[in-house]
Amino acid sequence: MSVAADAARTPMVKAEAVRKSFGRLEVLRGVTTEVMPREVMVIIGPSGGGKSTFLRCINHLEKINGGRLWVDGELVGYKQRGAKLYELRDDEVARKRAEIGMVFQSFNLFPHMTALENVMVGPVQVKKENKATVRTRAEDLLERVGLSDKAGSHPAQLSGGQQQRVAIARALAMEPKLMLFDEPTSALDPELVGEVLDVMRGLAEMGMTMIVVTHEIGFAREVGDKLLFMDGGVIVEAGPPRDLISNPREERTRQFLSKVL
Amino acid sequence: MGDAGAPQVGAQTEGGAGTEIKAVPARHPGRWIGTIIVLYLLLALIHAAATNPNFAWGVVTKNLFDGFVLHGVVNTLYLTFLSMILGVALGTILAVMRLSPVRIISGAAWVYIWFFRGTPVYVQLLFWGSIAALTGKYVNIQIPLTGIVVIPNIPTVHLIPPLVAAVLGLGLNEGAYMAEIVRAGILSVGEGQSEAAASLGMTRLKTLRLVVLPQAMRVIVPPTGNETIGMLKTTSLVGATIAYPELLYVVTQVYVVTFQIIPWLLIASIWYLIMTSVLTFGQYYVERYYARGSTRNLPPTPFQRLRALFARNLTTTHAPEAKGPLGPGPLSEAR
Image 1 (cartoon, helix red, strand yellow):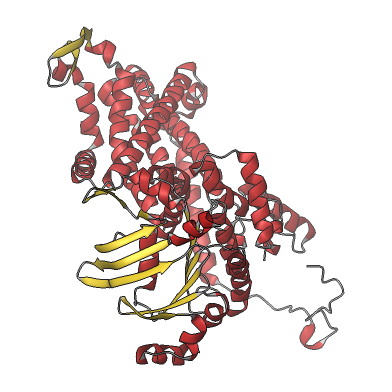
Image 2 (image 1 turned 135 degrees about the horizontal axis):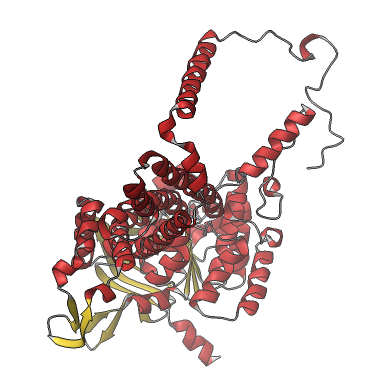
């Protein structure tokens, strides 16, 4: 019991005054937050508010310019010895990314591989796992996202919703300790959104730690443990989803919610 | 898919709006005039070729499959093959170098491409033909800048015989062109692909090998086919510069003795046409292979098209469209 409590005390993601700029444009202006293991954090906010950039900083697809960012107690992109920071090498960054799953708005499945190959390529090529074991696991995962019959299909033969579910299976095949979702349903036809959200809901119920950038307020309310409203590169307001949605304290939040609800 | 029971919308109803249209086709006099002009010119050409004795068709048919000629054909193919391998390998390395974040590395690739694309390949081949004038009769192989000799006194002709000189000359030049083709291919793969690969924990090299290059092939292959066909023809410059017995060199050797210039040039031309035709045909299938995943349905092969054409002409009704041989068939019902 005490061991579990101990583990629970290390946040899965911890951000401290994270800043990021592209040239002279400051996209993140001091973001501080925490996600505990098994928690689902949902980030909402207008486009250009820094939500996606913050998510991409967590697996070092973007380098931060200031502040500190930890995943599972380890600095992202750097290691610290004494007071000095050392940049991580390419392969060290890659090894850390392998522990974090990411799902993109545009799916980004590999079009030259079948659905099954897409799911298998990470464990086989990156983790050097046995191909037969990975195949079994990949088939299980495709079944979990309801696509066992599409294992042999190429992405171009799948609908958007099916592609996104394969993308989720591909990320899960790496057995990540954290899943990042970057507007996973924004590129989908409205009637396909539900099937993807269902998969994500199931994942949350199984205790996966997740950070989800989305415009699906309903999903945030139902599944989220914590809701962040970001705008202008800062967290405008944070709190339990139900409270924040029904009772926003900030005027900016109220304006945004009135438009999307 | 099984909609056998569904009512057929727009099926043939007797008379009225549903009957098949039988109309007199529109006249196209312009097309007729054009056709007649083309046929006339074609006939004139054939007549000239048949009646002008200087073509000496007898010499052509008699020597077309001469062992001497065939030897030249084989050498030309060999030279093309080796030079393209060198060119593609070098081009890939140069392309990756050009995309390197290290300025010196990308700069070096840029300078290489600048030099080899900026000078005529004929001049480059002349350099290789006169390589001994640069190195002297004997060469020492040594570690650069140290003066430490590894192997002393190799005769230049042994180190760089005509075939090696020709392959180096053609291949190094080709590398510059292939570099641009490969680079265009790499750049054609969206950034999202690299990001997805990175998020799975792939290193840059692994991403390139497993994700980017296989997709870049779709863009790289068609121009590489053209380059190969171009290379086959460029090998004809080798005879005049390096004295390696490729097809044109062999033919020239004959006609400087017999003075039957035209028939022997015809022999060379016929063989070049045969070889480029075969390459064009092969290119089609290679392109098809790399189009996997990018289209739902692959276009039919020439054979399938031919079969479909025959089937249509025989039955006059619409033959079922030929289906691509790839995949387990039901591409169309994937959704």
